[in-house]
Image 1: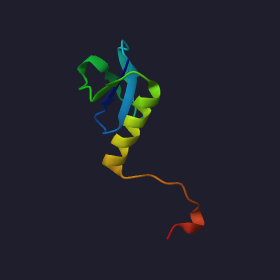
Image 2 (image 1 turned 180 degrees about the horizontal axis):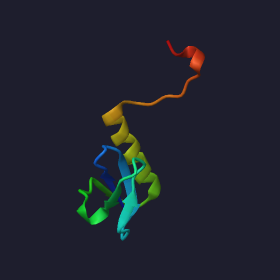
Image 3 (image 1 turned 60 degrees about the horizontal axis):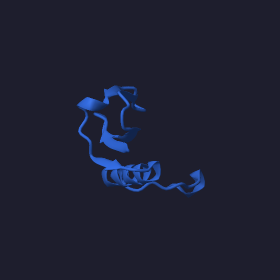
Length: 71
C-alpha cells in the first residue's frame, strides 16, 4: 500500500505504508504519521499518476521545449 500526501511547500509525494519519515525535494523532513493522507493505492504506478494529477492541479501542466521556442 502506498500513501500520497503533500509537503508544507505544496509538493505532493508518496511513501510505502510503514515508512516513518520522508525528505521532500525542498529539504524538509516530514513525519508521515503527522501528514494528512490524500490517497491510498496498491501500486507505485497509481501513486505516481495521482501525484502527477495533483501537481498539474496546483501548478498547471508541464511541457518540454527548446530555448529557441520560448518567447
